[in-house]
Length: 339
Length: 251
Image 1 (cartoon, helix red, strand yellow):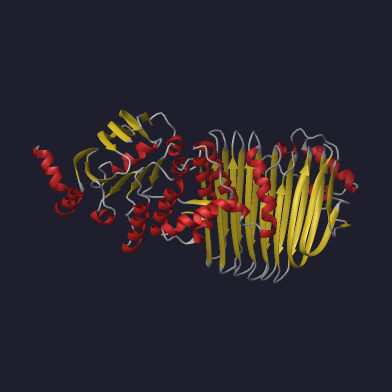
Image 2 (cartoon, each protein chain N blue to C red):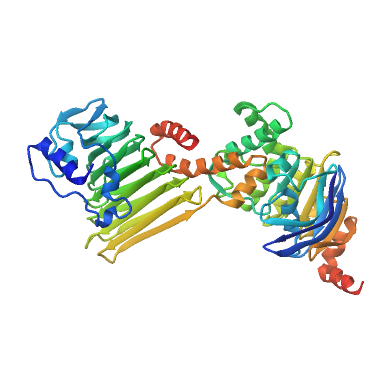
């Protein structure tokens, strides 16, 4: 499928509404994951993203781009608190959008899971975190197809947003995470993990916008990469003029489990104020030889020792998830690291 | 039991061990003393099979069987234990998970049944008393944020759990205050059995005051240059290593 064909499909859905251009080949944000690569060999036909979960209701989503156009008619809105589980299943081999609009009205745990056997999913999740509310969001892409997702979050004063994003699915997965801290005292705590093998490719593209003073953001994204797989992480922090007292931290760690595995990391800090505490770090490495020797000296064989260290690396991300979601994430990890 | 025969080893092409001969019989405690960079720690790494070191001559035998072709885990399962000078911190691996995996790996190799969670916990709690270790540490990541004393006690706990035939203790006293030293030493003392051989590597006499060795060896420039009884340790303590060096030079 080409980009033109994708736009054509989107226009069919919206009766010819004008659509914004798709990312072009030269688009810097798509440097390591060209849009053409995401589209790949997916047939240019519409598929369905079947979204199920308790308390969901269908509404229209304003058409802005191919994402929202393809989500037309398949949008769900949840004024929500407590725990909400949502499964997005891509049915058929083709392209399908989907949308979830979440207006939290109390503390919320949102668990989104993406499944399917083929095709390309273009889902967008939009979350508003009102003042004083904590939204915990666990987002797991575990589909065999392709995934180009968007997460757009606005956190109001004193609101807290915590995300654990996991990409462990198909040939190419990419998720754009855009979090805006719009009033004083808002917090974002973003964690991510990719687990890749074969020739898989996954890309976490994160933007945190500090639009107000005294907001705090943390990013910690990890990658476990084996075989010929590639992990990409871009972490952008934009601190607006006047956003004094900003505290922004970012950490990226990749563990390469083969000589041909690749991890690309791009921290991008755009800071337009002086009163700011910002840090970033990236570490791409292999398993620690001294740790391996220590474990083997205690009788664990080399494979057991490696599995324990790999599991530990990923487990630290799982531990960042809310208690109620950890057990299922642990089970996922077991499955992914054993395949 | 443990025999080192003309053992030579190097790292990155640099010779460190230059022909070490040593025999330790069951029930014996041997102390190896020596200044920094004399190769004492290398000795422990070579015996246990650290992949960074290349053995260029001689042999290491346990009950007459060479260990040199065996992987580190095979040596461990055969009963060779190393208490590390610097125990590795492993974030994300709970101490209890690690200990249980180690105990069961060794039990399996010895043809014993693996312990289930409850049986392991009972065993761990019992052995922790030996080194006065806080039970809470079981739930923490392995050695992460442990104090120097907690790390060393954790090493001795592992020795107690794994019941090795040969235990090599690489500076179990380094970084310990007087109380922690007493606890570590009494832990080791309690694990001294007629069947077990123990090799203690240390700089200082003070550990040996608690843990009376049967034999003392002075290690200089990759070799044992002098061997004797417990009195040799005292002599080193009062006269320093220079005295041995000078004696070597004139010999």
